[in-house]
Image (tube, rainbow, N blue to C red; front, top):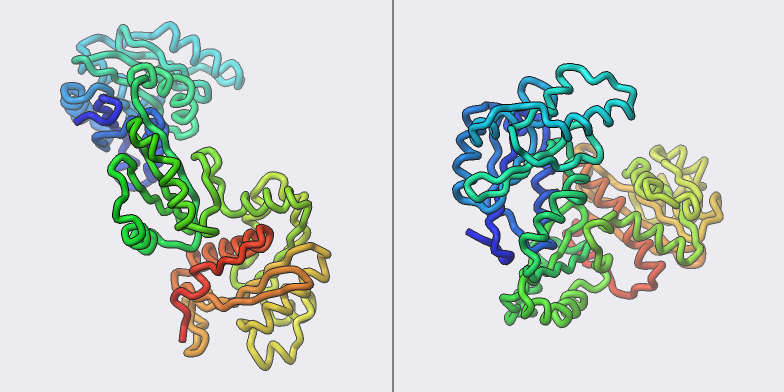
Length: 433
């Protein structure tokens, strides 16, 4: 089966650690994302362990079917790295020290003042006659050859090395093989709308959705990616119209159109907006334990816009540091509208920031009650002149709850900065009675 670019591209991943679950396969996602702008889609993916006979059999079978085979993993210096040996058997050629590979390996070791020992030299013993794919980051060079009319490209399993090699060597070569492909991708990051509800809205709103444009979703909790992909000139011509329709449907739940390189999450959007407006933010957190502040400060440049964060987990700290009234705490409880409003006001007073956000909730798994079940959270946000509060309900495991609430806290600040009037869907979804 070939794709829109006319090439059958398959992927073979190797490593016992992939079979046992010791590591999670992120490389196939990276490879698929790199191929997509070329109009290439993997037609098949196979994962095998470190067993020579299995590797040989799979490579022989795939090269009879595919135009391109990308082999990922098995290029290291240890005894269980078998890709070079497997390819030598398939090609029926000996392994030999490759001069270019050895030169790259020697330079890598010299830059790090690292001894070039026997196990390392194994990485330069490759099937006779192969070409080299330069590894700009690591020690193991990639290599390539043609067998049965199939281009085989062998890459290391270390993600940072694979990423560099895709950019510098692999994608440019594949682009030359499919330069007539038409592919455009428009991607939106969305918060507060789930896959199923959004799919239902789109189906009901646009029963005439064109076949020339693929609609795809990828959930990367708590953010959802929505992609529109056109693989023909007809699709590309239709894209602007359907982009406008999708943007209208998503409304302020969309963080805007992004590229894969720009997909940095809610915190990046908030920091960027604060920098543009020359405004600052402060946080007062209970149930999220500092996660909102952590998300903000993970963004480069956040020191220009983030004033302070208070993790007021106990009622005593809520009172002593943030000035929450003991009477309010006793009368309404820590998880209440009155308390989060006072938490936010206290953080604004302490910091002098332009915007403040405060959360107090029940992350679970214990601690809930009939009127305040696990998953309940009060969120307050705004400026000194205009503080608002809302009751949210997100019953989930503790980590998911904290991540969702922290992201929602950043989202309401984003909306305030942008002066959005639209009410988020998650304000009314799944509220406890």
